[in-house]
Length: 38
Image (cartoon, rainbow, N blue to C red; front, side, top):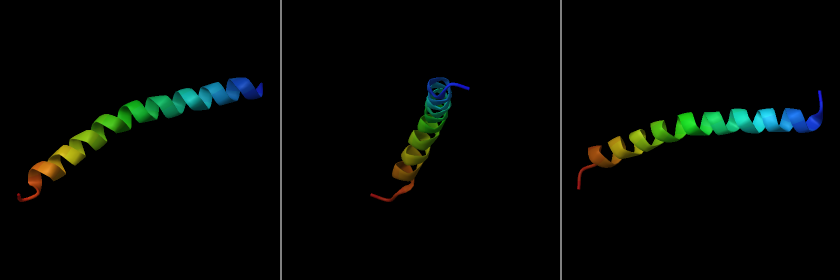
């Protein structure tokens, strides 16, 4: 397997993971902000 192909595949997996994790983190941070007393 060429190294460039492996790196591009890993980069794609990381990008997919980020696009899945980012909305969840934003929802959690919003819930924490909404749940904290003023």
